[in-house]
Image 1 (cartoon, rainbow, N blue to C red):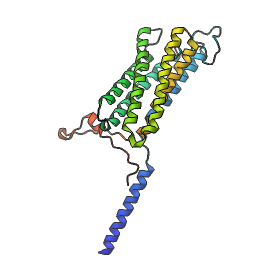
Image 2 (cartoon, rainbow, N blue to C red):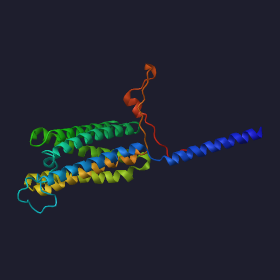
Image 3 (cartoon, rainbow, N blue to C red):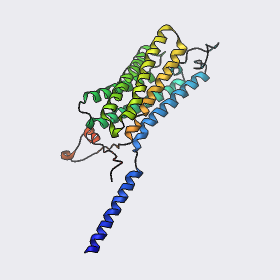
Image 4 (cartoon, rainbow, N blue to C red):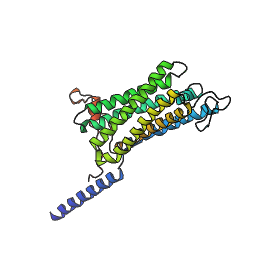
Length: 271
């Protein structure tokens, strides 16, 4: 009898040790790569558009001291992606960026849903990011010379609601404090939000004064700050995995939002 009990205890100890090793070996969820892919893909795509436009003499380079003879426009992102072949790449990049940004927005909303007592701030963050994503599609599919009015609406949606979303997510980060990393992630997000806001203000001031070269540089800085902000979501996403549950039985069926809201969290300190 004692030998049997000892054997059971050894088996339990071995099982606990195996489970502990497994959790230590899987500290990060694969979903952490989604915001990183969004940031890297969109940044690389926009710079490809820029270099194509410079090579085709559609714009002058960002490091130019002044306009060069025969070169047409200041290096704004919208002008760089205004004519083929750069416009084709620009449209594809913006459409894919809008889709990935929308997915990140939904997953972020689901992640915070069970942790936020007053849901209005979380809902506001989701709506702001969705409108910013919609603005990206307008930017990508309605070039400046083809339909300037719709293109400018897309610019306003992307920059306006994108800036608002940055501040909302920064506030939620500090408030929810996932895994006690709120300050570690929240402070950089506050700094990035302030940088985005400053760039937006400077951009419109320089545009109004006709200082187009510096306005274009500020615009590129604004977009890079915004994309870097999205990349920071990898910090919280590394703790979570998301599952879609499909059931044939009506009595046990969970709605899409309910099933996703119950996404399980990686407990890295669990044995």
